[in-house]
Length: 88
Image (tube, rainbow, N blue to C red; front, top):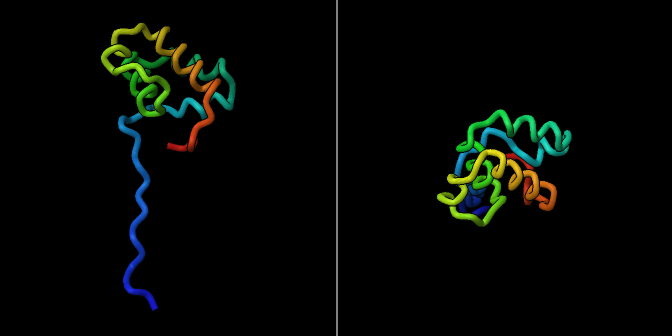
């Protein structure tokens, strides 16, 4: 017999929404990831960096960087990071 229902297990949501999973796209090729990132506005790139914790830089610093700089942050982090989980 059980004393009651099991406690709910909630997964923590990313702090911001991300329009793509850079780890998933990178598995299909770095060139594809670069093309997809280049099509996004800077604020989307900042959201990806924040959602996947790809940089320790404060958001105000990230917001002042060019899209090209943000793309390089994402690519470098994805290359060198094993995600805790891939699907978000």
